[in-house]
Image 1 (cartoon, rainbow, N blue to C red):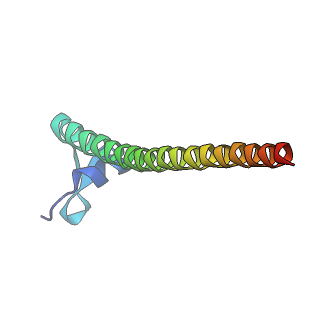
Image 2: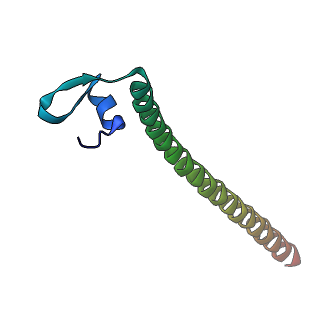
Length: 92
C-alpha cells in the first residue's frame, strides 16, 4: 500500500484508490482532513494576496506623502517667485 494524499484525494472525489484498483470509501475523518487541508491552502493564498496588498498600500502611501511634499515645495517656490517679481516691479 502506498501513501494516500488526503488533500489531492479530497479534490478528486469521495474515495481513494489502493492496490489492485480496490475501491475503499474514505472515512468521515479522512474527508474532514482533506477538506481542512484544502481550506488551509485557500487561506494561504488569500493571506499571500493580503500581504501583497498591504505592501502595495504602504508603497502608495509613501509615494503620496512624497508627491504631496514636492507639490507643497513647488507652491512655495511659486509664491516666492511672485513675491520677487512684485518686489522688482515696485522698486522701479
